[in-house]
Image (cartoon, rainbow, N blue to C red):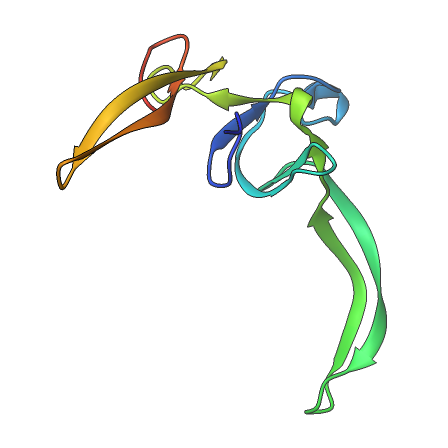
Length: 119
């Protein structure tokens, strides 16, 4: 089970500070997780300008130009935000037995280490 999943609220914990034009300290929601590259795409974080080739749609309108999109950021540079304190925390796992229709299963549940709340 992964520490960071799609939809988690995360905070950037390394890099240039906001005073110097960086993203450290900003919080955002995880849009996508790139498992093979150990990277995540976070909403509103690590914006880059991308030049898109001019094309035409079937209606005849022009597409392309310069766009700003979120670039992937390494997993080690972000931390999950604690739901109670709104500060970065580490993620822990605990097992819990769940009985459903007479069948008992053990499931792993993610929790914030600082407050102990489930994520």
